[in-house]
Length: 64
Image (cartoon, rainbow, N blue to C red; front, side, top):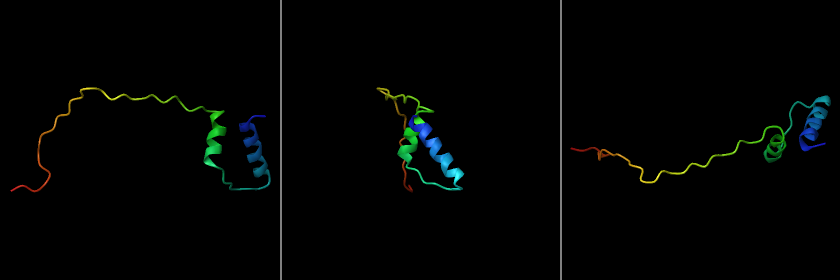
């Protein structure tokens, strides 16, 4: 029995005993859910070299 199956069994046991609310560790839940729905692979964004930024040179304060 894998961790996800154990978790489902635990939740069903809680339900059968009339438990309406339960607290679970978020890290534990993420690990259990990883078996059902793996996280997508993250793509690394690379900054472009020589990127041009255009600025108007305006001021930020009140000018007279």
